[in-house]
Amino acid sequence: DIQMTQSPSSMSASLGDTVTINCLASQDIGNYLSWYQQKPGKSPKLMIYGATNLEDGVPSRFSGSRSGSDYSLTINSLGYDDEGIYHCHQYYEYPLTFGSGTKLEIK
Amino acid sequence: QVQLKESGPGLVQPSQTLSLTCTVSGFSLTSYNVHWVRQPTGKGLEWMGVIWTGGSTDYNSALKSRLSISRDTSKSQVFLKMNSLQTEDIATYYCARDTGPWYFDYWGQGVMVTVSS
Image (tube, rainbow over all chains, first blue to last red):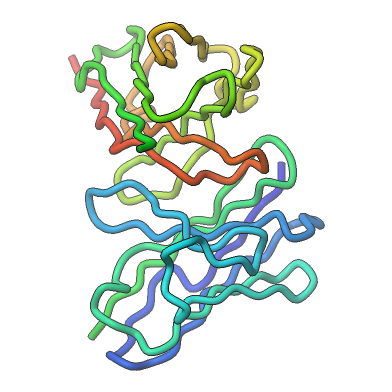
């Protein structure tokens, strides 16, 4: 199975900051990587697919990037609405796997 | 609009069988694959299995011996059955639709399942 190592597990940032969340794939997954945002008590929401493509309706403050097997989600100009847990997900092969999640708190 | 909604008992006794239903609207089960994903409280997401548009299924090998996914296309429903439930199976269970590439564009609200006598 492909392991997705996500870091950090939690982070705290201030309004207006820029933050980056990382996922390292245990093997090549190409651009088959998506990112989800999850608010407390809610289901995950698709933010990024294909490693770098912004889902419709997602603010352009969100962006995804890739360097080899390292994938990053960057959020610029943090707002209170960005608080939640972020999950990476590889869909290159089955079984589909997820990172362990990053809890983002806005100070 | 596209919607998925899970339903089923929130409490299952140890060693018993979990039965959940995912009722979809706004799309056809013969056009989109539907997956089951679960999340233990405070933990990460675990992919459980998928029912393909043609009706065949694939499962996470860690659950394969206990898990069955089926559907009724006339009712737009996907079913999950998992036997021999234990406390490790306590989680919120989601159904989700994939887009063709296997990322999920729509999710259900989730159903919390507890295992207890």
